[in-house]
Image 1 (cartoon, rainbow, N blue to C red):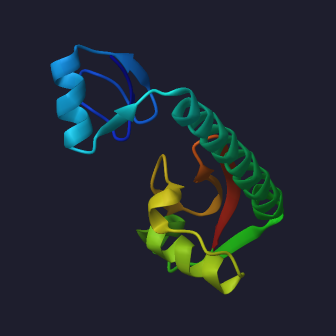
Image 2 (image 1 turned 30 degrees about the vertical axis):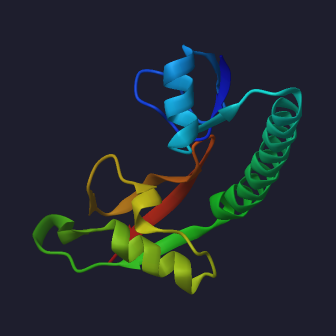
Image 3 (image 1 turned 180 degrees about the vertical axis):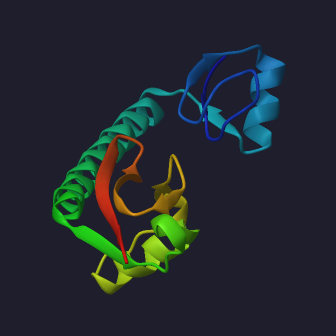
Length: 145
């Protein structure tokens, strides 16, 4: 029996996969509303849905690329307190960067901000911001007295 999965099933496949399974297992999945029979009409609908999702994904990537280009032109500056020999008290966190980006008009979640090493010294640092799994912006963060 050929079926189309409606959701991910462990060790069998992902949503949208077309599988050839035994009749009993196929009937079980159909009754549980986890699959549908792979008729010609259902396969055509699946192809249309996949095409639509692909177009939406490409549109999202283009939007993220535009945001990336704007972000990489920004210079974000933080005034920090320093001690002897210009050592910074504490460090700049992802939350502080998120707040500064919101002030500049960007709506970016702090979980998207990837800080490789702590921002605890004066000067310019580069921070990666993951706008999409395929689009990563590199932003200059400048720490000054």
